[in-house]
Image (cartoon, rainbow, N blue to C red):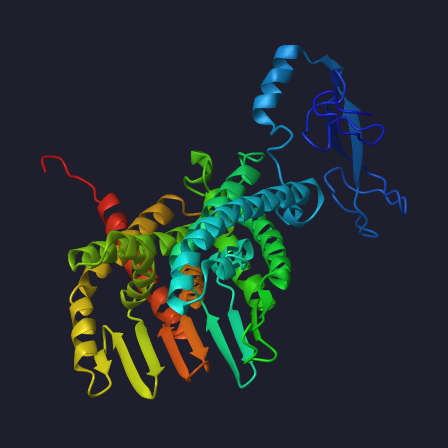
Length: 500
């Protein structure tokens, strides 16, 4: 039997569609269940009193169940239209576990694939522009004809895909008498704009089919989108990189020069999955109906998780904006400010949650160590007067970043209070834990390290402690949001007496 509304095939004899719940026939029968008490036990035939519910001889129930059907009632077209308003139509109901199976999973695969294609097209465009811009300066810098450099790709599409997903890069250089490596981890946060836009679009598009989906259902859908996107990125990392052998016309280098570049599969897989969860979740929450954001909407902590991810990203954006203003005011070119400000915004976002930023550098035998935290202040290695002046100038503006946590966590407390499903303390706790995890995940992406032994051994690390960032971020998020909830609750419960 097929449903005339959605076309789903149902089992024979079904009265209502298993997919949309609408009637399969034009008649409706109401079944009444009637309980009659009997005096004689059906098991031992013992005669009991009229009010007896159980046999006083053997203990068997004396109730008899009868079913009585009312007369058929015709369902008219206006009644059917009213049912459509009450019963969710096909495409508005979902099973949270269905995000990894069935039609919904196939749809999520499609949107994850579209997101990856968008990243691919943008990366291809940027690679072409960058490659053309770099060749002439590189040829002039190393003193070789432009025609020689023009034969090689200095920036490829896969390079930008890997950079935007924070994959680790390994360069190796081999020649007759020298062999060296350059290994980097992490990257610039500005590159995340490429997958961010694509994944937000994917999360939004995938959930348009389920406009009534709850926050937690939308989050589950984002997980499958993130998983597919991560797999596609990981596969590309296997084919990314380059291996080029350049011959020496002079014959001085008999084997020529061999240059190799490769990317880490696991790093690409994990980091792209993190980005997928963050930005697909942000996109999935766009368009969620107000009824799912109101009182009771935070069932299964869906809104807590969404707010944690949103406010983690929003905080970094706010700090990045502040840092851009500071950098430009101190003479940095706007283009350079756009590139550097998001990175500094991420580090200052950590400082605003009582984290610590550390810098360690070893260049040509000179070692520089520096760290800064709100609680511990600056610690800089000796005999680095110029470096001390730089970090002092930057630290003067740290207090501005404390405005961002106050803003986002007060906002979170207000939203969670209005959407509570019954236990605001647990919901605030879920928000704080999810916020700490989101911050730790983002900090793991922007922690940068580099090591090279080409010409000389040098190394550089710049980042924040991940575990400490998780704990401090979670504590700050819970305390500030809890204070706001308690303050607004107290204000909302005040009563006014006559004449006051």
